[in-house]
Length: 257
Ligand code: AMP
View 1 (tube, rainbow, N blue to C red):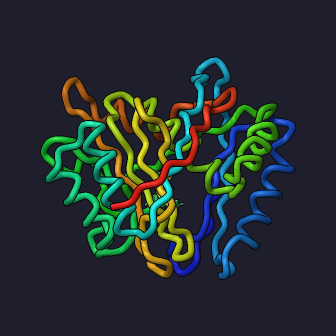
View 2: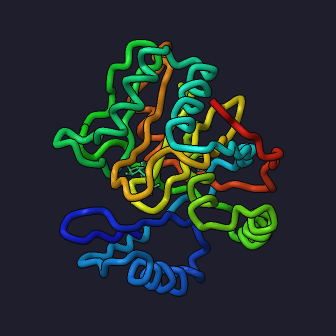
């Protein structure tokens, strides 16, 4: 589901379901589009596509760590450290953080999808700098969604954005050549973001921007050795991925500059 207002993205969601559940799911997502944000959308698109069950990749969700930071500046510094630990060059880290903060689209606005950035040179590799790469066709296995939501609720991570970002990051971390992902939302009131990497998992950072800031985005950092852009994008946009089991939840950590 994808909802827009005046050409701007308002909300979206990705689900994989059994055929018999599609009518109720479509209704629930349309309802969510209408009530989700302060603005009423002027377009809501619900697209239903058939997936071949035998081609779905079954995977586990990454472990979750929450870093508590006192302010967004400290959050960005921590994000930089985590990205460097994952193998992103220092000059690429600082340029990338600045790019998300300033607006990564050519007109200085937000993108619909993610930037793809070479971890060593910082070169942007997504074919379209306005749209970016849109990750699609991923979900928690239908029978396991309730248990996962209950688990996240129990540890104070019940916000729907946590589950959705975890699933998206989980798929990104399975993409060939990925070394890390950086994300913070463009929603002005949602300041938590994350760095994800194959080794450290999904690392939430409680503040990555100032409340009220409408900028945000995603960056996928890749290692270009033996990397094929078409294969990478086809995986993210087209391959069905279903997640099973419960992610490990690490104790909250505190970061002070
Ligand atoms: P959100 O967390 O939904 O506020 O999204 C934050 C940013 O991530 C957006 O501004 C987009 O640039 C990007 N984004 C959102 N959804 C996707 C997606 N499905 N695939 C890739 N990038 C996305």
